[in-house]
Image (cartoon, rainbow, N blue to C red):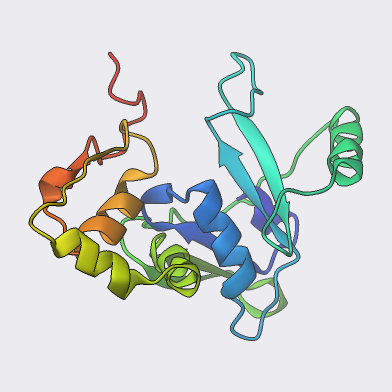
Length: 187
């Protein structure tokens, strides 16, 4: 709603509201389709302390998918110290984040496209350009090979299942704690 209020015309959101930092990098670098992003904001609960309880941060990755240079982040920080108000668009409907789909919000010049994307797709496609999946799949199929990956209920779980189980053919038991949880499985 803030992006709409500030004139952003195209918004990509990961399915279920999840998009890991490496996946966001892949999205910025590869998901153009006639539209080339200048970067993307990542709302992070991980290692970027911010917020009242230092449990939330905002990162900005540039058009190359990598972290913005310090001179950019310093300017962003400087601007945040001068914020006296913020805009929230009224009348923006709630978007269903459980299914990949495109939504149009508003009309005419005020129209905004919100696309809920399969958060694993761009990331896995980019990994396939870097690694020989067929060779790794052969290793994974050997009877003397086994492995386990513990996602610790973090955002990486869906990516691990996609790569390890769907792409490489490993059993679901190879992925421990692969369902993301807000409290990372703690009580």
